[in-house]
Image (tube, rainbow, N blue to C red):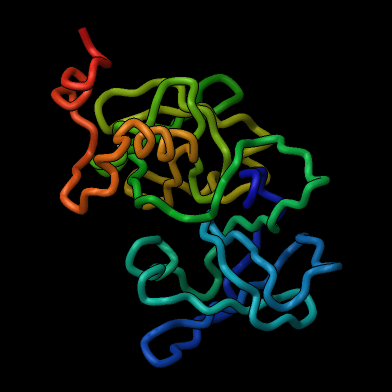
Length: 219
């Protein structure tokens, strides 16, 4: 688990093909690596990876085909900047929200513009994730815990304060940039709970308005 509070911006050193998978070697920048051992989890752009090698100010992690297909990690190359966060402990301040490091989908930046001292960020989410994104709810963008300001269909808007701009890779976003999205953990579990016994049905789909009405949630 993570908090979505980015601890450092690292840089991809190299990608090593490994039998269809990839080993990613990342320079850790200012990330404190004391106490980190092989097998520990580190979130890279919001994707939970396992450190398989450590050396100096870098670590290596294996990235499976599944992860390459479902995240933006496959588009990284030498020199790419990445958000880094070590897994939280029981003594870690929870300054963001509970983040699992399991990417739900890839979104796209539609607009990124100045608004006073902050920046307004508008993104397009995959249609299947729209139901999990709510105004004033939390969402992870490349591992950064952010608050949703406005929602319009599958589009949503965030405000990025100067500190977040300086301490993450968000400053490099442009229209068309693809980003990893992780929706709020509670929203995912709530949907599953509302399905009740129907959740055991392999043919059960998503919750619909008709389903809610039939089970007394709507009048």
